[in-house]
Length: 173
Image (cartoon, rainbow, N blue to C red):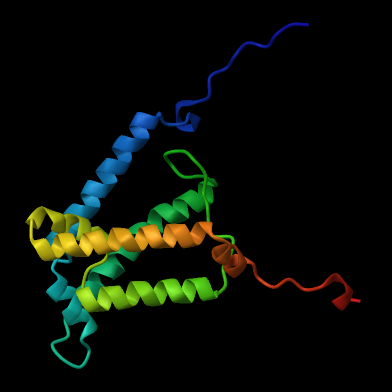
């Protein structure tokens, strides 16, 4: 029995090291934060003005969102064509694609919080740099909400909400 020689995978197929992955994630996060600051989306007033359709409406958030969708569309299409992301790993999509009570409740909670404060998690993290007490309070409340969700998600309530009704086998006959 002869052992076959070990053949190294081509460089484009080798997985990235953990350090390289973390550095790329840090770079992407810094680029995202810079884009938020450059576009003014860390200012809660700008977000609240976007949501104020009957008052002083500011469409700039819609333009930033359209730019983000356009910027994400190209690499997603390339990854779908290749069958895997450029930097390794695998493409993962949600298993549940329909509208579920969990999705509706989560969307409502996010939307209400965003509408009341004008801040979502990305800008909230950047706003910590301002050292303003109200921004730190919001961040603390956001973390508490995430911890509550995590606790709920680990509970049986989340498991039962994720289970979609399945047709019975005898109903097909």
